[in-house]
Length: 288
Image 1 (cartoon, rainbow, N blue to C red):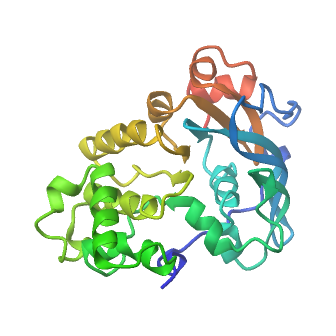
Image 2 (cartoon, rainbow, N blue to C red; image 1 turned 90 degrees about the vertical axis):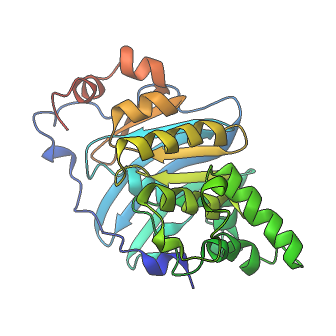
């Protein structure tokens, strides 16, 4: 069973710079330093096409080590498409083509010799809607370690499952019902179960695509607290429509507009002293 079997990934409409409301004459060259001192991943000259429709335009961006990088912008601006480039999830979409380089450890993850399945073990993903497998809580978390051959006996497997659930802040809530279906948990618990499933294979990077959009404020606060804990051990890239969430959880923020990376920098600077007109208008709520 492939995680992508449970997803319905929409193909965005064509993005056209001239379609922006009153901003067709603005320079969309990236403002800010795209690099970080200790990058975990590097995106260089990334262009993404769905057939003849281009969704992402010449993006260059570093994802820092042991930090949270937030991607914000209006719906349809290409941020989720770009996020999925990091672990080749776009490979699962017919007609999608990615140009450019995504580097990890100095190697292009789009090289022919790279196995996407093994890459996704190193670069895990948590989706917008919690999507536990129709299995027990235990088997949801054990799924990755089993298929990747990370364990050799039941004792090792139980240790990984318990440790992953604990790191996801869920163990105390489910330790007495690990044999019950993961689908029976609340929405917030299901999302934390999906996070536990992602970290069970010891990834180096975790991608999060609007992980709190379907959750209530209390569950959202739990996930945000968890993100803060996880960044001590993982590099995290998160797409969010909530500017408040980006301000709370991230150290760097990248603002996207119509498939272009418009501005990137320390989160505090982006939200207090944005340098690009489009960023300022989005932050202040004048459009988006």
